[in-house]
Image (cartoon, rainbow, N blue to C red; front, side):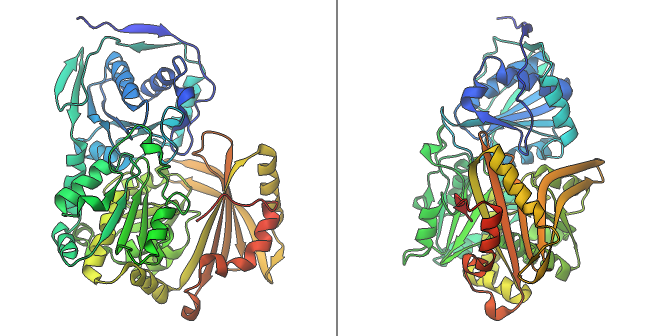
Length: 534
């Protein structure tokens, strides 16, 4: 059957603006006539995808395969040079970044809504990564959005028959298409970074673990690494089959959706370490016996023990970066190691410039995201393997590793309060309350409130983040921002950080240690109870 490029007339949608992680909407929105096609054509046109190399994949949620095939038909129409597609269309966010780097590609398109609910009644998303493996810059995002508001037509080749469930190659018009094994590509890099033999020896010493995949994308990689390579018993890996609705699980590893794992860690039957992934594989939750590791502390610990990892021992450590709301635990470790520590806005793409210009080796954020120069995205399984490699070297339980960090550097108590389904009016009132406390006194300390403004010296971008920092004395920070990843209503996040240098007072629960800030928090938030406290 001959292939013909068809031009389809369309009308614009006015709600296709990029958030911190691309465009996320409900499945019902994405399945509107030409909604996905309009967005993809805007991306391909503004990004100049003609004669470019691209990889397509997603987190396996409902509508994933259909979206991939639509993108393929449109990429053939726009004369892309070559399109790589992950087998079954299954490709985690860190794996797509690794594939971009390995094959030296121009772009990657990720179909994912990360930790948002999956299924026909759930959410869907489109994100674009550039040649450095990270998300495209804000300028290009804005240009794509402007194009979506005036689009009148798109091109497509309708009658493309190609099975993405089988490793194969083909060519359609001028575009080569190849299905690849992303699990092999990902696992191969992990074997290069970490000492798998040392980790295997750890498991031979009756060290036990539990992994939770929430029936999202990371299970296929977890099975290959933990079961096939490290000989972890298959019964230690929960919910690793990829399902379109994530098995009705909410693949967001936090104190609410991972309560069963936290409860397990407090029981007599607790394994030595417990891991959990999110929907697209970029987040990680680390739990030990009677301890949930703060993502902020985890970043600091990975930096502290990076010399144990063959890959980083050989290359050396350039620097580290954290998102602004992330606690300053990593700052003091960086200072002790005499390396630079950078502070960026929330959104992983802001680490991209620092990684690309070799200013940092590691980066992380408080929302269970950690990564390094090996990948342009945060990488959940990588962080888990890092922890296993550290424990194999130290031969200490997780809790002791964490407490040793506090004993050495002091402890940054940290908590994140999430407020869901906030109205615009309440949001404005809460922000006004927060800002109005500037130049006041609290706990006999001076209060300063500033908006966090970030300058990317490489992209020549000035980012007005609309996130506000409240500094109370030198040891207390409160940060207020609205989430950029929700598809309906507004989610507010309030971050609370309090430093304690006295090592006799570093073993409290965070909720206990920050209780003197509760009157202030209640005043700011109109006494609204948070939905999640992490």
